[in-house]
Image 1: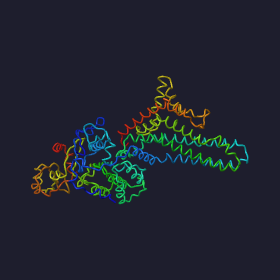
Image 2: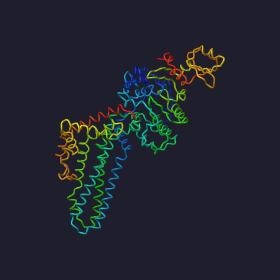
Image 3: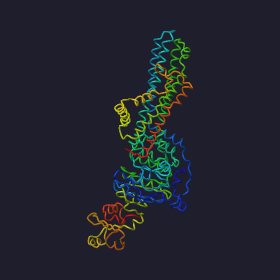
Image 4: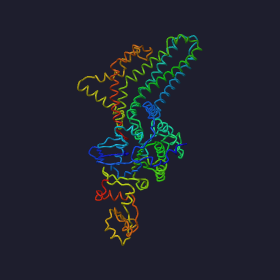
Length: 315
Length: 291
């Protein structure tokens, strides 16, 4: 091990006092490398962001297993196709719906704690003692709800539904249910494509200003982050109502929550999207001003969060 | 190029002046102790040097403006605030991975060899370690960084004396060399007296006294005076007088050694005693002001 050799006291004559002594130029970590390790840090610190969805997916599978067992005993051989198909379709919807809801709750809780936790446990002094900029830190934290969490959610939905399909095939095939006809009407791939589109457009990209706002609140509030995040919103709603007797802000929030132009792929009667998005859907989404206004607002919030983190120490 | 070069460094928090125009210059290879009472401005000075707080005046650390380029500066500067800053959820192996990932000057093998001397396990989380072990871990991480400037702000706060001694021993034996510079603040001044090459007294945001240890040793002398010589000793204008075991101990500045030796036993005083004399006696402060 050469570890101790390099600490040996160098010949003083080779290290002229006061002048910048020659030092080996070390390769600087690339921004991607810094972002990667910052992301690892987030996942180490917040293991619950993937453990909780895993538990939820496990519970869904457990429930589905019980349902299948029940179906196994109650279905008469050669029963009409309608019954299992409706039931399985509902179970698939339920699985993706529950996992998406889990994602949204986790994303909100994560954002509210992201810039607050490191200040309240004083670890911000450790993080700031390392060559990672506030910009990198904040951007990576924003990347969690916008990229990482939906990716985890999507992967879990795919795995959960794939396991559900396999289990259904095994159980129902023995009952003589015409599986081929059933899958012809329920294309998993199309469903997953729709799910992917829906997750990333509506809940990730279109919601970006929401996440940005929650991150800003978590960087700014000293305690009760949730209340401080909600207070300005409520204040605007009340002031607008009293001064202008209107509710434009509320409508704006609602339309964003609904997903704006990205919600096109939604089936009109509600429920989970089943149709794969067309290129037209994607183009309309990308061309919608709402998306870009949202990005701009999110960027303003994140810039403010970066600035705050620069000034802040432990609380 | 100095490692740290500050000119009329000022910092206000509202109406409170934390730093009131500090000039300081630290060359490579020095170990500087920043000494001062609570609220004197030590931490503010350290925070400014580390780019953790904005300031007025001129400040260059390794040629960088710390506030504008904290992340760049931290490639060359290592920093231990106090024992409680390592995140509690962090696993020892994660700490090593992360440091190796983000720090271009982190030597993982070196950190591992420091850790091998401790009882700290790779899979332990910080929350499972004792206070002393957390400090050992932090020190192992920081000493494995080939930094040009190491800043320690009350690094041994809350540790028992054994750990404090170990801390400074390994810092000197395993880390310090003439290409590095260390700035340390601590309340346990007497423990680091023989570690320092320089010290600086800060009081109310101003530098009250700055000196190298060699200067200090020739400038100050402490005499435990024979009772019958007390009047003669007082005539030499000691800057401070205190009672130790019923005998008077007088502190002299710029006094003639042979003359002092006639009065009693002459010693080099503790920094802490001079600190009390200088800070506790405002009349003495102006004599020591400046460089």
